[in-house]
Length: 308
Figure 1: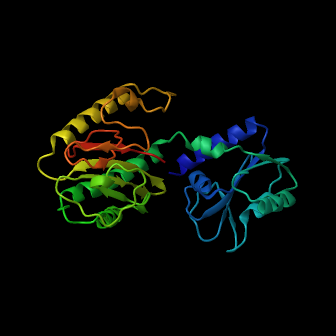
Figure 2: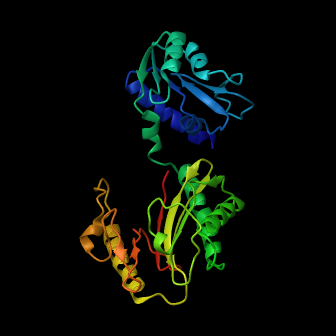
Figure 3: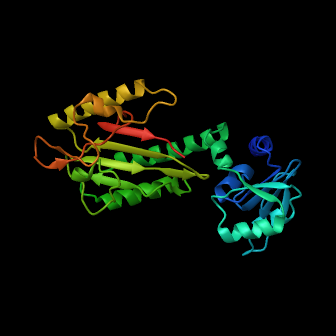
């Protein structure tokens, strides 16, 4: 595992040197963790020939990393900057406050140069270790939802189902939910940003579940809509067919650097622009159809997305 983090630091060092930056000070916590693999690391100084990491407590780090113990409540950024011999020091402008910037500038004496989100740009392309973590997170969420679908849903509230899904993900090894789990039943299904409430699931409902697990800092999200009951109504079957065809056409057209404009709008059916709703032919009530991303044999309508 240490080789992965060493390779990441080498890529950052090479990019900085190519830009005329002799040393790099990384302070954003998620970036420090990505470069070190240590939860307890608080800041990192990367020079031409070494790396120093500030930690607040005992923290396992590779032998090629020099550790700087920082007392609790002490900002590690000025301490690392004071130990930097470079004339040009790169820093994360989007992370440091004005006060911290002034302390770093006074401590280092070097010319400060913004990294321009260099670490974030490296993180955009995932390596095998990151992809493995994302896979585990996705499998945890999928297992939790699969178990829930095997239980009795009718009569239970959206809030209760959301809480059970969060508990099941933790039971299966997740650090927690990636985002608040959202469950929407009936007229609440397919509503973006719906907060789980006291609406109880009824037979024949569409139920939308937005679920994601957090595993070792990596998060996935999956949103699935399924029908509760034994026999879907004709309009539900037709709706599924329309959305599935639109989604399949979108998948087939996926290419690198393509526009993110929804292709669903070109395929008619029940797809509606944001802010609009569809009317159920059976009940006459307003219902917003879900926007879908993949099919799942266990559900009438379903989609899954993995994200960072």
